[in-house]
Image 1 (cartoon, rainbow, N blue to C red):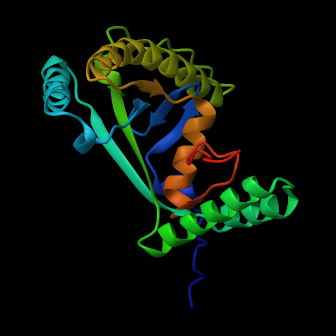
Image 2 (cartoon, rainbow, N blue to C red):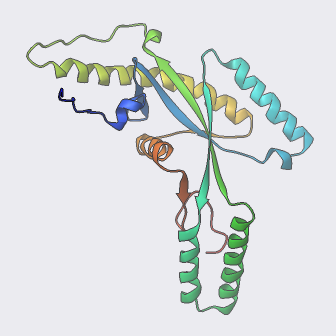
Image 3 (cartoon, helix red, strand yellow):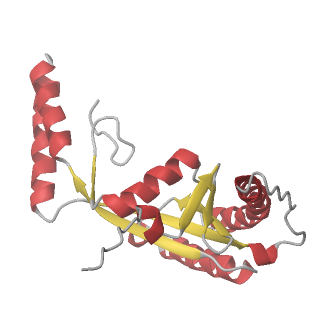
Length: 220
């Protein structure tokens, strides 16, 4: 029987991501992007005038764009098991009877909330793309036959800088329009991008505790 070749592949082979440099995500095909996290608001709790202002603000955002964007909404079920255990520990440690009672009631509220349908963590992102076709100047060529890896590395760094400069201006346009809607748009930094993509490809749920930014504490 002919000897079968071993399959050598990594997770990166199945994704479009090549690298993340600073706050720029480098993609295959000489493309790149940056991500902005957008704050949210309960639309149905707003007055009619506020709702109309949000709608017109969104229309203004769409009409002002001279480039494509992607609006990404990620919903994940929240695992509150660890959170409840930490509350139990705090209930045992606290000496104040009133605070102990409030913590016990809060724990019961969280438990019933999960039973009624669970808790979803929903986050909204705007993906701002960049393509090498937008470049007005070609990347510098530093070909060295003795060091074939050097041109690739240099080109990647130069391309990320070029993409970053273009994305900054695009990002500013979006931030201005989002602020007119009464919301905020915050660019994701290097570590935040790594965490986000890791969770997208690996985690179906997120865990929260007293130090988490996902769910704010009601009782301290």
